[in-house]
Image (cartoon, rainbow over all chains, first blue to last red):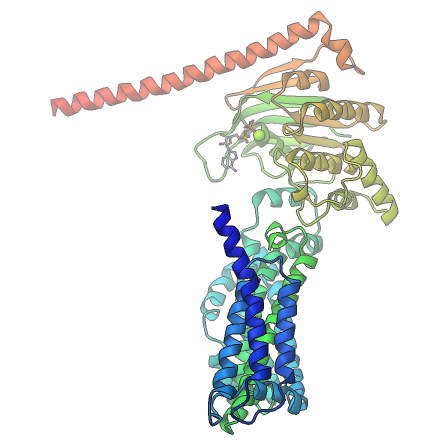
Length: 309
Length: 281
Ligand SMILES: Nc1ncnc2c1ncn2[C@@H]1O[C@H](COP(=O)(O)OP(=O)(O)OP(=O)(O)O)[C@@H](O)[C@H]1O
Ligand SMILES: [Mg+2]
């Protein structure tokens, strides 16, 4: 048994590096059948991937993931520039896609900034408002009994439904986008905090009672930290919703932002731009999630479930 | 200033109006007195404390402190619960400081030093930076005790405070409590729930034994203060008194058993009548 598993690890261990070398060989030595921009960016990306695999070699699965990625790159490179006779504009080569990040970098950067600005404004206000109002409404039974049923009706409404109306209603596209993100994130957050606060442990309440805390102290020192872990747990989900809503709004009615960029390049048949935009969004959302996970560790070090992640 | 009186107190929980948890309970605790409550599990010890701390309100009768009825929690009283009740998001020391801040307006440094001192006293010096989930159950309980002592209330309400603590630390904490109470000028009253007879004898002036929703016995501990464990445990009196308390517990067990049997016979009786009627019908 141990012999078998040992052997398996060994094969895996080399496979990813063999695939890397094969990919490198393909890029460098197999002649291109069609004209593509410089190979250097693609080689750089591949090399970075290999370096990451080496750096994270202790992590389980990293080599398996690497194998899949390299095989994907290999196939992509082969079918778009090495084996075909004519370039198919619907499926651009990796060289073409990467080239966009160089030639079109100013426009891309500008659009990312726009989207980030909208996202930050809508998302941060929604989370803070959801937390503060949720704590207050969750704490007072009379408020809770009024708002809970209303919130339960509103929360399941898909936020995109508002978008066309909000674009018409609000003066600028920026206001509309921020409002849509806000509505997409706020209600779920609000409901979850109300629920968390209203189901607070009786033992905890007893120790709060006997300490004779002021209402402000209860909010600041008890209820806010108490609901923070559940807010942070929701955050990755919320940011995905916010981003989805924003990109859709931009595609529907925007004149800037990543959603607009992708839609615009698709309309004009510039699919290399489309694909580079999609990849960029994937990287962007992943980075946001990494930041959120860091935030969890910094903000709620007492939360056992967060510490274990 | 801290005398306590229960006068004909009845209590029922709101979610179970049929069962009298306390029935006609009356006792007085003088200022500076240390009173332990003992009795079988579920006899109403924690409930009695909750009426004193103001978390629950008597359904009948009066609970008063210095003649004034208890209407809710107050800064004159401090509580250690049977379960640990620290705030998970505060480090151990912050938990103690937070308690102090509720009763003492002082600068950060004073409060910090005070918290440090009491953590040291309960044997947790150097552990102040840990979160409750990083401490063992007994350690968490000791932090809660440190918080109570640091708040220096007139009345200490302690519900099996040493229950989860190992023998060595338990002895140390009992001694600490005796020492703290004796060396201070201000006289503090203590109501202390425990299952440990020796602990009750060592610490208290009086012991209330609860049974069937009532105070069944009110016993004076026959030792003067200050007292030490070594001194009292060698005396004959100690063993006689201990014996008396054990008998109470033992009688209690028999009593509970009889009550259970009675209920059983009552059920069986009804059942047989029922089936007889059924047979006739
Ligand atoms: N919140 C509650 N709601 C309803 N009944 C309760 C509640 N808390 C306790 N009781 C009941 O009141 C009775 C007395 O409970 P209490 O907690 O005072 O017992 P205790 O003497 O402290 O027991 P133990 O030694 O096990 O801690 C029990 O029969 C219990 O079932
Ligand atoms: Mg109890």
